[in-house]
Image (cartoon, rainbow, N blue to C red; front, side, top):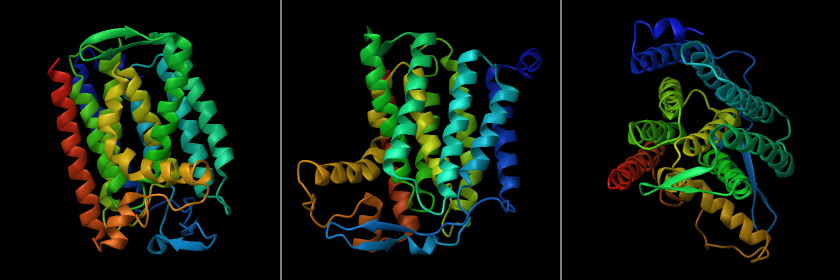
Amino acid sequence: MLYPLLSKVMSPTTIIILASAVGCIATFLFYIHPSAFLPRDKGKTIETPDGKIVSINAQSAGKVTGAGLVFVMVFILAAVIFLPLSVEFGIYYLLIFAMRIIGFLDDNSKMPWGELVKGLLDLGLSLIAVITYIYFNGSEIFIFGNSYNIPAPLYVVLGIALIWGSINVTNCSDGVDGLCGGVSVLELMAFYIIFSGRKAVPGYEIFSGLNVILASVLVAYLYYNWYPSKILMGDSGSRTIGFFIALTAMKSGHPLIFIILSLVFLVDGGLGLLKLALMRTICKGRNVFGKIRFPLHDEFRKNHGWSVPKVATFFIVCELVMCLVAWGLVHAF
């Protein structure tokens, strides 16, 4: 909306900084007094291999959750107001908005939605996102400085897997104050910095500005979410972040770098999903990986006695290392 006017007196980078500052301040102010419509965490339970229902993260019960509803909305508004708006970007915003609403409805539900329902919704949004991407950008990807054209049908399948995986591993990692938000900020900024001026999909320079805006609103959120947290992002935040990170990986033209930049999420939340899948299929109920707890942050916190800040800091430092590794690999070719 304002981009045509602002671009006459400001550079694109300055506009992105302005949008990020506005988004960060707005998010901070919204969270001073969390809105009454945000739900309260009801606590989480898991089913053990022997069929028992065990309560987990009981300390989160009663806290304001679904706070992702706020920072995602601020993110979208800041993007629409300050950055160029195109049909492609508009579809992405609608999909992000839909992911936010789905997550919030789940956060606010008396009974958590089943895996099948959320899986089908994820599949639908992922399919629309990948088809939109291919329609506007094609299916070319870059690997170590070389470009390759992937057959569109194959790209659709791989793109859906990328988005679905990113949504779920990010969501599973949101169980410790500051962890998901802190790791996400670093990953979002890494995508912006690493591919600045590199071979990428046309329009990525503007799209990457969205990374900075989302990282900025997350910084404001982290002020209230760092231990001891006052608010929780809930599914409306974590699932939306995962969805956007996957979009960014595709839009950068380097989707394989997702494996490195999201390795912390893949190890922390992904191994738990792998364990569950194996127990339901190949291993038929056997306790895979022994007594190791998943998500992995619970292994450090509950089995090794690490404090919440120590767990969050450890994973954030690991993400910083992965960002440096990714930067080195990309700039070596």
